[in-house]
Length: 65
Image 1 (cartoon, rainbow, N blue to C red):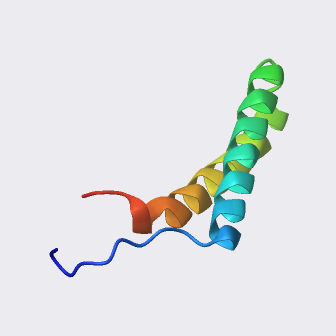
Image 2 (cartoon, rainbow, N blue to C red; image 1 turned 60 degrees about the vertical axis):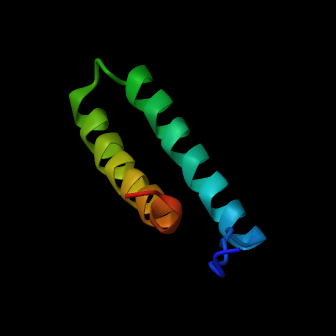
């Protein structure tokens, strides 16, 4: 035994990650639906960028380098 403890996300963290993934998927779908409306698409893409950044922050502790 190496003495190293494996850490797993808590249920709250798992829920937050799941919600963040759903947000990203929802926004990707909206972006595809509004592809022909540039003004609307700009706002969706900004929101999508923030959602992806949030998801990346939530997943960072469990990603292998």
